[in-house]
Length: 350
Image (cartoon, rainbow, N blue to C red; front, side):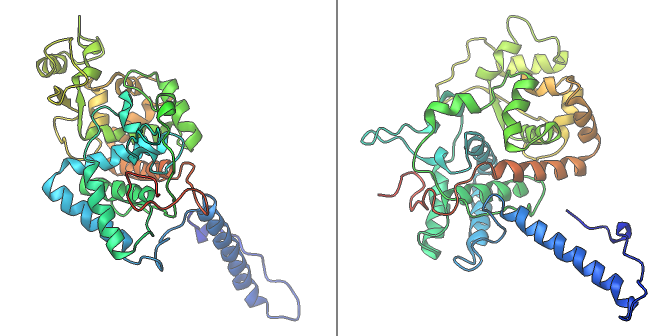
């Protein structure tokens, strides 16, 4: 919230013994105090706050940023991975790094990464590098959930998206996997707009925010397994003909296999494939939405106006994307004495 002092009406001077010239100042100070208190309450409503590690691990955010940049310089797709990982982690019940837990036969834990909805996710091994750097600087202090949120934020900046998003921290880590509930929470490539909006609404993300968040599809790639239903036996009529021909070249058969390492894929955005920009929205208006759920945003009356506006204004898209990302990142976090701070993001503390 930003105060516009030009819109604040101060009380007129009262005819009393005290100096009336001080009353406007007093009124302004009272408004400022009330605003500050309300703003602080909003910041702590989820139990999260900015610069949570300022005293316990002053360089925590800088360490994560340095690690994200280092890995991006060597493996550019890691930045995309962090963003997708945050989306998966936060959408399934809570932003609590449950996604990062590996399966454990001894305890019966089944990793969320084993779900078919997690198909194609990668680069989890580099989370270990970031966590190791944090543990060296500040043992048992920075949670894996905060690591993931901050890595996604910094990854967005690496990909040309909004920089310095004010990400609150203080999340703690789950001690269980939600494998059995992944499909209940995560949207799929052919969802209706109503289904997608209903999945994001509990997180406080409205239609405008959904159109912005799905703009993350401007980076990365989509496996043919999720595309062939729009291409065979005939190309979906909502796809631009030339784009449909390109997609058939990328995915030459309807028999796309889901569980192979050498998976055929198509880029989400051929123009700026590794930049988070409004090319995604421009493509939707031209019938170049890669996934069915993407293309539907351009025609549904609840989302189409936002698609059009973002297609013409990249700054507007970035602003709304940053705001929606923050809201998503604060979905049901574990705070206080809930959960734990994992020493190794892959395993619950022993």
